[in-house]
Length: 305
Image (cartoon, rainbow, N blue to C red; front, side, top):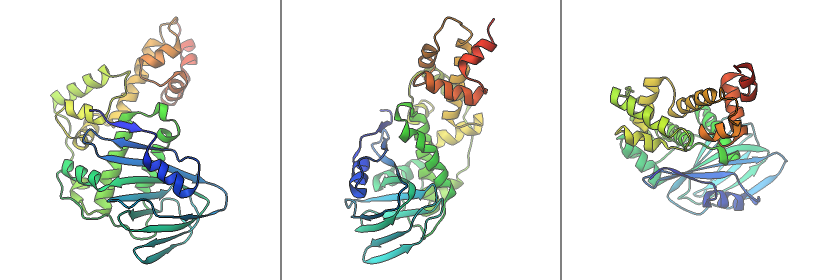
């Protein structure tokens, strides 16, 4: 079963209710093993004090990272109070949702939040063949530029879900879990495992599978399964072999395919976009321009004949 990305989910609904806003852009990535990772964006520019009641108690962790500087925090957890001054860009915090946590949050803020159930952590540790971690711990005021960068990279999937690539979101979620378990759970083997490339047959199988699904939304788990590898091992081996992450390689192939089809003057650009796996013509135009340096229509005119 491929990974599903669900834009309407309880994680986003709980956050919206907690902050007293109409909606929170969010999605939940669900793997074929059933484990979930919730992703959400909270952005508020006006000065305001948010009094946050606890989220529903569960065996899970809430990770938050500031992708721009913001206001102060006061967090009540397990009978103790933690005061955090103005938040620097990249400030990272981990909340154990099995405890009763409430908070006072001063805006402005621009934050990315990740909901990580215990089941997700355990499944990933098993996939990576490392011991399960007992807890995720992070010192107050920690600045984590890796999580902040991953959060920024996930923003387009939240803001334009119609263009979100399953393979891309899978890759970022995988990187987030590997980093967090290594840095805050003590799973050193996650980050230190030796990276080996794909075997020749796996390289051929991966390329053939991705090219056969050029126009569809393929998940990292599906490609890895074709090669007989876990998602994490496949992702590292693919990059070692091709010098690119699977999603970046696939996007490059889609752009190349679009460039070939643009040489057919009577073929509509919207049809080319659909054939090559882009959400629509405007999506093709943005990606093509970023890769080639000029929009598809202009490239077609310059290369006519």
